[in-house]
Amino acid sequence: MKLKDGIVTNSIDGESFAIATGKAAQNFNGLIKNNPTAAFIFELLKSDQTEDSIVKAMLDKYDVSDAVAREDVRELIELLKSKNLIEE
Image (cartoon, rainbow, N blue to C red; front, side, top):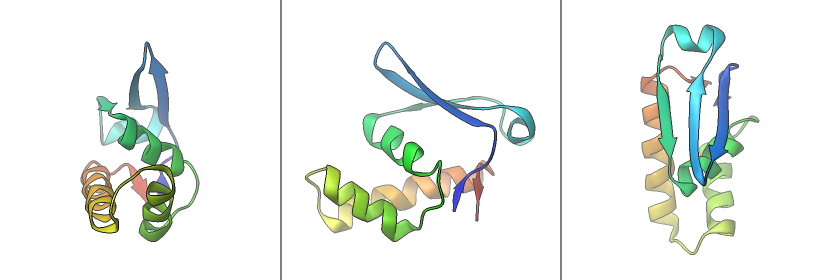
């Protein structure tokens, strides 16, 4: 899975966000403000990923348990799916 084409991420003054442009904006017309963890996951999702590959990257980067990382990843993926922002 990965972000659909047209999802743009950026950071301004330490604040990370994502917006949908082009065709991606047909289903989601807004801005997503990301905390550092979500911003990290968004960056990973710019290329094809699996839930397991994202969890592994989270475990490598953050001092977090597998259960917490997996729950956080699932929560964000479900949100992105509900907004139709992920290609499977």
